[in-house]
Image 1: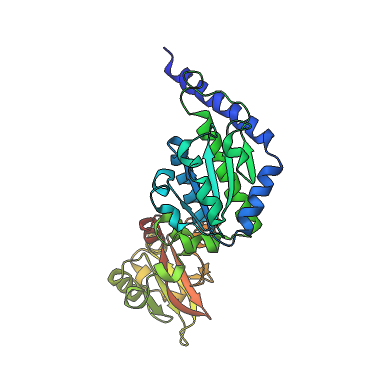
Image 2: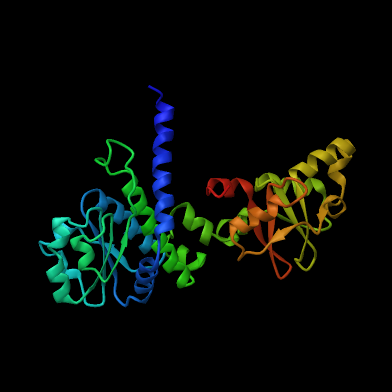
Length: 322
């Protein structure tokens, strides 16, 4: 038994089904996408068994990109959850055979409530199709195991159709990364879309700052008290003028030996270094670092020529953003 070949064969079978589905998309897909976009209420996804698992994910995807959506289990709906449904809602049902009893039993109540009914099915001329205002019908596809007994390709195709509808509607509405961030405030996605430099920088007593005219030795003392790998240098008007890093110190000692510590800091600092603004997203600050000709471990945070803080690579890494 070639296990690797079996795995690849599953991919081949399901990919073939996806390509067939892609080519079969037509006006019904456009109609359902437009109806979802225009829906004043909510998109109520429903499905039984494997179809239910798939549509739970589709409902979650739609909700995450701003489409008012929830999943309604058809069996629970028959025992009271239909009370959540309104005439402004759209019911989007998934049933491979189009004859799922629990879903068909919902139809009289859905009609009385006045919600619109749309469906995705795997068989033409099914009962569910007859009671739907528009329907997406799968082409005939091969399941990946035991002939057509085990739902594999059909569930994959169903998931992709749901994703395609969600993305189409989101693009119709001009959904933006900023809006996505509103719905994902936690986790890595939320951080990437919302965390600003000001949220992560060392500031106040944590930030290392020295004035022009001070010696390298004095700068080193400040660097040791606030171990962020550098000191920021300001002039007599507290304007940011340069930066001096621990790497600069090592190179200076290698060049001047004991005399290194007696230099004035403005003589050996990096003048006009790259800096970032406090309102910049941290991920954008990382991109600026990547474009530099040399590796850096810190960036000064400056606004109106005033030093506000220091952004450290170690803190960016701890936040999971690199």
